[in-house]
Amino acid sequence: MILVTGSTGNIGTELVAELSESGQRVRALVRDPARAALPAGVEAVTGDLNKPESLVDALDGVDGIFLMPGYADMAETLALAKKAGVQRIALLSSGSAALEDLDNAVSRYMTLSERAVRESGMAWTFLRPRSFMSNALRWLPQLAAGDRVRVQFPGVAVAAIDPADIATVAAVALTEGGLDGRILDLTGPRALRPAEQVAVLAEVLGRPLVAEELTDAETRAELEATMPQPYVDAFVSFFIDGKLDESQVYPTVREVTGRDPHTFERWARTHAAAFAH
Ligand SMILES: NC(=O)c1ccc[n+]([C@@H]2O[C@H](COP(=O)([O-])OP(=O)(O)OC[C@H]3O[C@@H](n4cnc5c(N)ncnc54)[C@H](OP(=O)(O)O)[C@@H]3O)[C@@H](O)[C@H]2O)c1
Image (cartoon, rainbow, N blue to C red; front, side, top):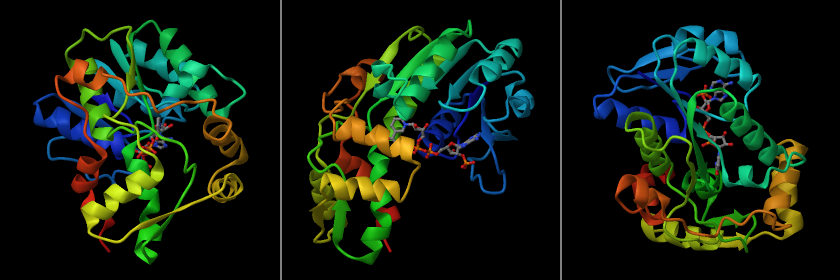
């Protein structure tokens, strides 16, 4: 039995579907069963990653967990998992874990999550994806309003990855073994700047989209309107101060899955309906 946390999210939705279609027993951790649309036959169990004691039922009989990073009392959650007989953890992390920068809010929670899993005594695989292609969904309100898209960090090229590819790698790690103790840098097939992603979306959606490139000050102001200051500072440090380079392409998805990672165009075609309004 595999327990998928974040089962309603970008990766979790794909992972639950993939495991279920391959005949694997899969359980989905959800916070609100009424909001979770799961494939037939997938068992939903309610629990909150910030409340380890709420996870006891979800952990019963589980062999492997796809685990989201950064929640409270990770050590306690992992101790409960080990006690329940869990053998293996595939931890969602990110490239910023490699920085081990405990003064950076994002690098900090990734680093501390990896450390907690390392110390748990269970087998582990760390998934370090670069930015997700699904981050383009944050442009939805702008696309609903018109053809201009204000893009943050316009000069930063990122080898973004389809969450479905992260899910496929997680499924291999949790069901086939062979990836225990591995740290997997996961990217898409090429690095694109935000305006290049917008150009691909324009082509796929058949719309005359124009990327409006924000200055550093405008980017910072937009971030401050949407997230707490420590996270603003973290992303400014990564992408304006240049502490994190997500432009390098890695062969890992192909090595693990036997196929190339999805392009941004493919992601956009698969999710085109989400952009229709
Ligand atoms: N976006 C990126 O570029 C990127 C890159 C590297 C790593 N990451 C990491 O990936 C993770 C997911 O990011 P995302 O933006 O794609 O979000 P997402 O997975 O689409 O959504 C978050 C998921 O976590 C669940 N969740 C939230 N709080 C929870 C809690 N207290 N207990 C149990 N489940 C909870 C949500 O469930 P509900 O349905 O209940 O809300 C949802 O399924 C984040 O940890 C992020 O740091 C993201």
